[in-house]
Image (tube, rainbow, N blue to C red; front, top):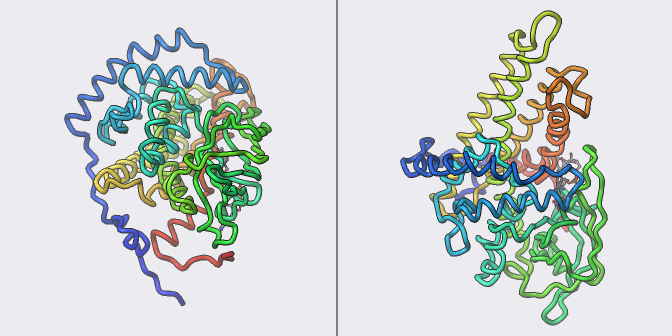
Length: 425
Ligand SMILES: Cc1cc2nc3c(=O)[nH]c(=O)nc-3n(C[C@H](O)[C@H](O)[C@H](O)COP(=O)(O)OP(=O)(O)OC[C@H]3O[C@@H](n4cnc5c(N)ncnc54)[C@H](O)[C@@H]3O)c2cc1C
């Protein structure tokens, strides 16, 4: 039987072992000063923005892009975009904890969600900051912050989801360009994005993790065909993307040729670690909404809230979310101290949060009872919104790596348990 070697991977990477990371759960005076400044601005800015911008329907992708980027531009103008991004790229140059305060305050007032800026702001931008050349950073980061560039992610393929390293989309070198052929799938917002983070195979002979490169793809390049896929909620934000002799300049490669797997792991560390933070705060708001809903929904002569077991379950979810928020602060303070991208703790966070979110959605549907299957508002209850959130909670345990894959990462790379059998090629 294999012996257990706890934390060996993290030690080997030079990172802080998960159980030894130090953290401070309290906000500093500077954090609280920032909170007051932001709060005062939001009080006026959010209603003003909402008065002058109609919320587009789920299917109106162009309208959604306009809405999301207009809000991002508003944040930028006011000095509240990219709180912890360096000032030289248009950010505020503040601490990562101020970024957390930003998320808390945005959720508190129900400010517009990051929306289509998700990839650019929350994982492509941070990956560029960590790995790209100065020229690439100067070209893209300020435009992402101003809401002028929307990004998408071209990682998954029909035969490469969980086993992403099996990807086959090929980029053959031709002088100063790569010629890309193949396809991607589940590319969220690919149809309206300006740029994509694209993983391609640049060395078909190398072992599968060692022949991959990370490219910046201009989505308007000739030879790209985008075919929308309709999801269960009815929206068409997913796409298949086909590449037919698509020419990408070699200067668009981030990092060294064939070092793309390492860079993709940096992208995931942001996508699973920090990118879920804004969602998490939105969910803690949803827990409060569920409590309010339970007080409204009647069951025989009482309300759902009169059910002690239900109240206990809502309380448990709220407490778990509080604990997860402490974990977020721990991950953020660990990353800030080591000046490194977030570590494997992101997998713990993503796993625990997305599964909790599903339990919350199931409970919400239980409270609603039969009305939960309706797709329109009934008696002033935002059923459409609640149903959409419930369906979306199913997809979040799949996006950015499924729960099973996160469990494998936690087991093998954090706890040092024996590795599952894999076929290496
Ligand atoms: C909302 C959403 C948005 C997305 N957006 C994008 C995007 O913008 N760009 C992009 O590139 N991709 C995107 N994806 C795709 C996503 O990354 C993949 O769906 C995910 O990685 C799983 O891959 P798969 O769908 O091919 O499932 P598969 O890999 O085929 O997995 C099928 C099932 O087998 C399980 N499984 C597979 N391997 C193992 C294993 N080794 N051990 C245990 N269980 C295993 C999985 O957990 C899963 O339950 C998105 C997905 C969703 C749901």
